[in-house]
Length: 500
Image (cartoon, rainbow, N blue to C red; front, side, top):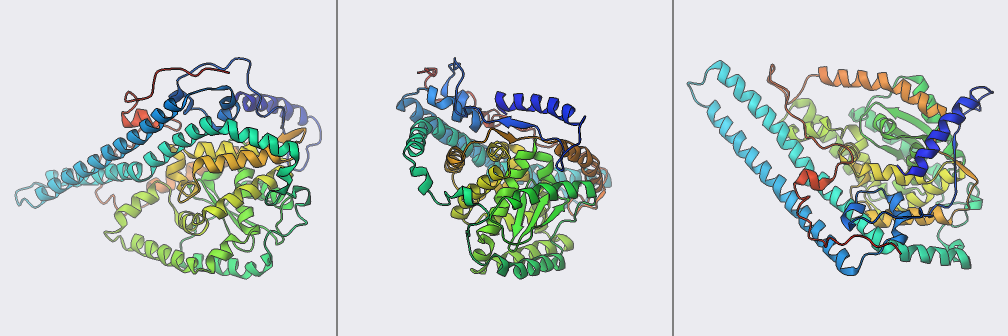
């Protein structure tokens, strides 16, 4: 989080204390962020190697990059380093998976020994069980975590290289008024314009989808805490009231640890518990909701359902549910995926229905940013939340943010461009007392969910009395080069950045 936002947070605490002394508005105390000069830089930019800037946030880089100067050779060298390290790291983890497979095979062969004792058999069962768990972690890193982490750093490299020129173009469009001619540039008419005709026609489709999900048993249970549900509904309705939504919005809070939200055609918004845990302030939460409401407004779900995508979704969901219930051999990989948070339809629907079209994702980004801005929220909350998703916690429990989505750089720059084109407000809502209260209510819900998950019968952990397998040590925000052991393999020049 940038220093500016930290100051906003400090100011927020003061405002909350002050507002508690008077009658609170319906949404609770609403600390607000001043807009200020969004791309102003500090007087002195600390010179760092190019590689070091890739660990900074997108919002920091939007501010810093116009004041940095690296030559083309440095950019090319860093891009080569990232590409080489990514492949080296993936190969390393794939080699570890192959080694684990060999160890599993060896342990299984020992089980066939007629002289094996009961204690030895128990130990072999524990060994196989834990090796399978270790393999699942390595597989997630090789298939998702490593590629996403390096894709994220490549996007930041592109930002440092290309944003200064893009920013000049934005300023020119602002100066000559060309920005008003962009798609959906009529933001002063939000609520009175039509993005896609026939929203009400989708209501029955959404209801049928929910009914089918419940029949198939692929919808996670709802959170029972009414205070949490009421808070989430209040924020969602506030965004919806300042959007182009022309149907009632129905909000469901699901007790699933996946960091996600998804919307069905006709105005049915599902917010998963993991999203509430991951968001640091109300503007981040509103940003995600705005994105999902935009999918409904633009009728993206309806357009994809016309291609019979929904049939494949339900078939896959039912198939996985059946495998899990029968404990079949195919459930091994699925089980570990579910253990990591790919639970219920949140994963299936997000990846297949709303993650299938890059064009639709960019449209939802633009409209969602407009809606939260119109509702008075800090629109950079969407960018800040996206930044967090490119971490270990994000790619494991919120993989739908990245599956088949537009390139990171394009998505971030388009979001920043839209924010720059929006009329500036004197202040924005970043944090509220209602959000902080929701977090307090959420803590026991999370604790109970973890306890329930720990006591739930496992389809894979057949052997009892085994030592718990070690989990991958990869903290949120950790440099992927450190995990991959490639931190010392930089091929970039050692020249530091020169400020203009």
